[in-house]
Length: 632
Image (cartoon, rainbow, N blue to C red; front, side, top):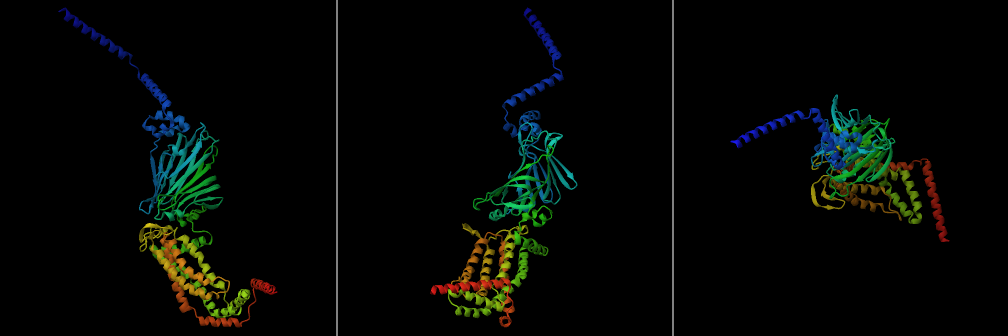
């Protein structure tokens, strides 16, 4: 019984002791203020420990997934100084601004265009044309801060804000110091426009920028392949720029430092990326690097373009009004941007060739485009129009040929009368005298052909660069801006390619028959072969076979529209020559006219003719004196 009583007392004692302990714990627990203070002390202890082991590269990976905002700011302060607040902005976020023709994706990281998609155009393999994609471009501002840090905007996170300005979309990307101090990129896209307003400005950073370190703008872009023939695309991919009021370009691999740069254009055959500034860059380091070497091994990229230009601080701030253009290369569109000279990017040719394309060929093409949407038919109709315009020159050439044919017997008599090298000068004088009396000139046959050459070279530039022909089909050609392909060879022939194009074959055949006909015409215009002089007729016979072969090889990988034009053009020329020869030219009438000309008193010689005759006379006197000296 005693043992049992002891156990009850012990139990009662434990209960009393437990109650006392609970009362003590309740009465001594910390207040809410004390708990918050302890929490802040624990966070600070964590920050201190992380600062000892965290490197900048660790912080740059994805800090928001590892640390709380307060910890990110504490660590970013060491690396970014005044711009530490950018570290808590998501670096994976993007914002889209778009209209009916253009879609731009702007990344928080760098505040730059991550993707530029042209909605109305596809690549040769039916994918959307993207001038920027897969990190092929970088836009960056490199600057120093008063904390002796060198920062690059492409590595920092901008905070987006999308608003509307009427029908325009406005995207503000801010790299913040705080709510009132920031660096801003401002994009404004308008309906149905490829030109985008762009501005770079800062607010409240006059005490943040380190003026001893230059503020440099850097824009790099590597151009992707978009066309069927990467060889042709690379041929027409160029770096254009305007400085000191003139438009220039870099060669395939080149680097230049230019002053007062207004804009730079990274042209990719039918499309271009352009950066324009209202305040010209005082200097610009421009670089073009060719990446394409061979179609068999290089099938993705064509060239890399780079720009590095210093930006000026005014009162310690940045303030630049600019424009981006991501879109097609269209002469008429660029011409509408008055005072910019962007139409030079369309590259219609230089000198007289460019003038012909801009003021003649383009207007004919646009007029016919309004009549039909069949671009193969447009080329045929344009060829007919051009050949009709050129037909007076063909007629003039044939008239000269007929006149030369009439007086050829007399010229042969002169050769017989004055044989040998020693009489070469006398032969030439007599020949020219007969031609002058007959009203015939050797140049009258050459000049019409020479006058047609500018048209030839102008069209050589016009067709391969005409955006309207891109991916337009005609007959067996699926793209008039590229080669037509009727057979894949499965192997590569040097200078020819790995395929067979039909339009160049047809054009080569037409050229052969045209030159065959033209050769008989030119033969009658050539004076009889003289001793010691090259036989022009033999050279012309060689050209009859050489020119079509050269055409076949050269045009096999060129735009099928160009081959179509030359095929139709030569067929029409053959037809015009046959009509003129058989139905227009009357050789009997020409012969009668020549005889009549001979009876007339010779016209007074021009000053040039007198000097030429005098020079020939002096040469003949010297020649005769040399002959006499040899006999002695």
